[in-house]
Structures are given as C-alpha cells and as structure tokens.
Length: 432
Image 1 (tube, helix red, strand yellow):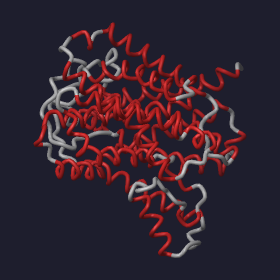
Image 2 (image 1 turned 120 degrees about the vertical axis):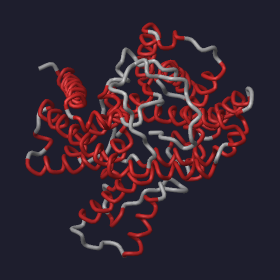
Image 3 (image 1 turned 45 degrees about the vertical axis):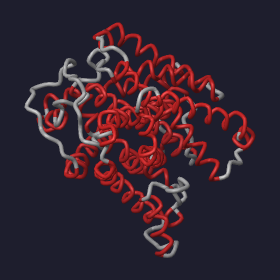
C-alpha cells in the first residue's frame, strides 16, 4: 500500500465517515437534533458550525499525537504537517472568534459595556466543563501512582489549584502527584484558556480604542511590538530556548494578541466599517475563502519568522471574514451535524483529551498501539470520535447548559439563510 495513502488516506476516510454519521444521527435521533437546534434563533450560525469543525480538528490532531505517544512514550506533534497543523490552525481561529465576538460587543455597548456581567458570564461559560476536565486530570494523576500519595496533600492541592487557575500567572501546569504525563491526560489544552483569560483581562483597557480608527493604531502597535521583540530583542533567547518566564509570558501575550485575537478584532472593525453586501455570502466568496484556507495551510509549512507568520494570518483572515459575514461555505457550516458539533464544541475541546487518554490506554493494554496498522489505528480513532461526541453532548446538556441561558427554538431546521443582522446581545455570550 502506498505509504502516503496509509498515513493520510485512512485518517481522512475516517473523518469523512464521522461527519456523515453525525449528520445522519442529527436527523434520526431526536435528542441530537434538538441539541443542535437549541438556541439557534438569532445566532451567528456559520460561526457556530465553524467552532464544531475546529474542535474536531484539534481532536484529530491529538489523535495523531497519541499514536506516537503510545508507541514511543513522547508527547510531540505529528511529523505529518497536515495532521500537526490541524491542531495549530484551529486554535488560532478560536482566538479569531474570541476577538471578533467580544469586540463586536464592545462596539455595540460602548461606554455601557457591563464588565461585571461580562466576567460573570465568562466564568459560567468556561469553568464548569473545564473543571470537569481538571477533575479527570486529578483522577488520572492519582491513579498513575496507584492512588498512593507520592506528594503531600498540601502540594497536591497547590498543584491542582494551579490547574484550576488556568496556570496563572506564569502558565504553569505542574505534574500532580508526580504524574509525569500530567498534560497528556487532557491533551494539554489548558494553555489556550490561559491566553483566553489574559485577553479577557485586557478588554477593560483595550476598549478605549473602540472609537473611530483607534483600533487600527492599537493593532499596528501590537504588531510592531511583537515583531520587534521576536525578531530583534529576544531573537537569540528564542532560538536557544533560554527565555525566562517573564519574557516568555510577555512574548506569548503579544504573539497571540497580534496574530490571534487582534485579527478577530480587525475582522470586527471591518464588518462595522465596510458596506454590507450579499457577495460575502456568495458561492464565489465561499470558494475564495476555502482557497485562502488552503494557502494558510501551505503557509504553515514555510513560516519561519514573524513577518511570514503575519502574512499567513492574512490568509486566515481572508478565510475567516466571509464566515463572520454569514457565509456558510456551501452549507457545510449550517448543517445539523455542524450545528451539533458547534453547540458541544467547548466540551468537545476540553474533554476530548480525557476520552482519548482513557480509550487509547485501554486499547494499548490489550493490543499495543505500536503493533497496529495505520488503518486499524484510525478505525479505532473513528470509534473514539463517536464516543467523544456522546461525552461532549452529555457534558453540554448536564454540565454546561444549567449555567447558560439558552432558549429552545421552534424552527424546524437550520438554513444557510438563517443569518440575521447581529443583535445587541448580553455581554459574555457563548464563545467557544
């Protein structure tokens, strides 16, 4: 069998079968259809669908990482660029989404932006499912030592508290009870939430730039600071891997503000300033958006500096902006399957690593992953993917939903045309 087909053909065949089965399930299983449609009235449906695809892409990338982990005992990115970038690129687009949605709210509310309500809503949205994920990390960490206390109760409590606090302030996620694979237990997703919260904490200051074209000056300043630090001031330390924790925190913040959240903010600004046009939702624009996404994937293979990285983000912006303007990409983002994955995307994101670790640990104990063919491994991943959807749906319904104010919709189906003008909505609405 051709090695390239074995490496990439099986994963993508399994993914195609997964999406087809999810779509069918949403039409045949009433509960799944109801979850997919819950609260869809007045929402930005293409963005919801995009979330679902992004969360699944991260799961798939981590499935490839798990294959290497159970074979070699090393938690490293896939050597196949496509599978590797299925983790990197979606995280950036998640940051785009956050920047876009919350800058929309800042522009809508102006000086009346309710900070207390915003942070309260963010806590209700993020903490429940994430804390469930951390609970599993704690359980696996204790189980790693046979449920024997390798550290004192006090140290275990302090280490667990660091996870509960999203690694603040230095993005530190210590091994609990000396479990050396601590971050593997939930696929090391917590670092992205660290940057989400640093972005939220920045908003009270950043909102001053909402008036007129100040935001363009702010974004330009972030880019200049990022390029200056990355290419000149800290270039040698980055190359040698000797960044101190303070420098690493500052550079990380500027990196994701300038090339992640900032791009979403730019998309929000463009949406408000550019003339409205049906062209953004046309098939021609959808084709160009998908071509831009392909260029971004190609660019990830050649990006080796801050300037090429910024150019790559522009390709991603050309993909993201039409979706933000309501383009469903030929209906792919507004199908029931996409809406279900979008609805449960946050639970999928924070819990997929837990399910992967438990499932692959069970498989490896009976049929060593190193002995499995690529086809057999990705067939198992397909089954695990369906389990992840079930777990994520249950988590959304029983863990997330009680903290969210979601109204059921009476509309019989999701339509690509269901993209109304964005309403003035309560601060801190659903993000991921």
